[in-house]
Amino acid sequence: MDNCLNITFEILQSVDRGHCLFRSILPSDTAVQVLVCVFVMMTIISLVVNGCTLFSLGHSEDLSWEPRFALLKNLIVSDILLIVTQGPTVTHCLLQKTTLPYGAWCITQFFLNTVCVFCTLITITCMALERYLYVCLAIYYLSILTTKRLYLIIGLTWLIPVSLSAVITGLISLGHNHLLLGKPTAGLLCEPDTLEAHLGFPRASAIFCKVVGLVVTLLCIFSYSFSYLRMYQEACNAIQPFQQVNRRARKTVAFYCSMLLLQLLPIFLKIVSDALLELEGSMAMIRSTNYPPGWISAGTLHIMLLVMLQVPPYINPLI
Image (cartoon, rainbow, N blue to C red):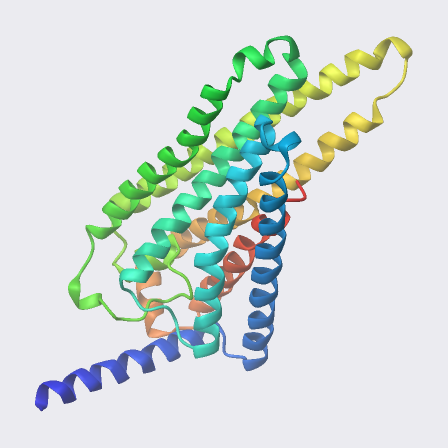
């Protein structure tokens, strides 16, 4: 009987702590209602648009065999997985007015989201390089990008993220404490900062995650810049004898670069969050679980990150 009472008390205490942490991030009920509408709307629209695009590509014999559309289908699958794991989780926390408890779903969601983010970055990189081959090395395009190599590339876009995510999750689990199971985290989603703060900032996982994320992001930016700069130069050289400016090439490059910035917006926000974390210091973040005013800035960044994570799946079919 005493054990049952203790368990009940601990559950109520965890619920109350989760509610207090939630209110430290979102004290306004109006903001909560607005965010619920935003996440529900973006989740539904993203699923419908991505699902319809995937269905159309899968049933089109003219498009499904092309490498760029094969990569696009790979990107859409990654986006749908990201939406399914993020949207309902955040919406549930908003409706319950509590933060996400640390447990099996928290770790699973963190692992899947990390896989999807890395998969998206690597796929976008491959798509840019594929366009470069198509435009600048058109003669060798079919001999370089064979069906077998295409399947290998798509396999690597999942194998590499899964491997990296497994290592990151394993390193974070080194700070695992069974006493923390069921305890509410300080966020609505188990993103790296939230999980690291909850587990006491395991240094190895934090450094590895940041270094790998930075390397993959820089690789994506470099590949994108190289590919579209070379394509733009080819377009300019093709029209240069006519003494005209290739405005269409310029608009195309500007469009894809702006879309890339939208893709990388959550990562840029994460870099800002990491910089803020380093400035405030790890001890300041630990003390923030006692709800000082300083947590508001980190909480605001957390909410902004959650919203920005919904943007890439929303715009990918357009790109």
